[in-house]
Length: 112
Image (cartoon, rainbow, N blue to C red; front, top):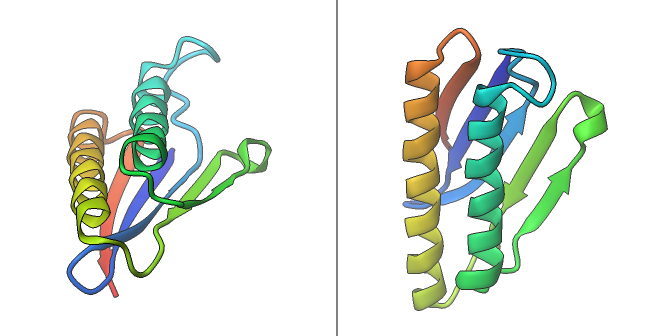
């Protein structure tokens, strides 16, 4: 099962973590894994390339599927707005996947 967690700091999403594998199909044929992977990779690429945010990324696929992404604590206003827009879209997409494939994905939001 994939476990996705969005971490909210003070009025912003400041990190997310995804662990596990969906096991919804054979390797290379798992549409749930593909959906979560595309959302995550597109979000990280958008944060880095579009918003120009120097995110910290820890990716350990060999450790049972693990991705953790952290934003810097302070950003310039335009970068912050772009980053939060991308992250909220990511959270909405994950929530939808988890709702439609609840046997394979859990979604949590944590406020710290």
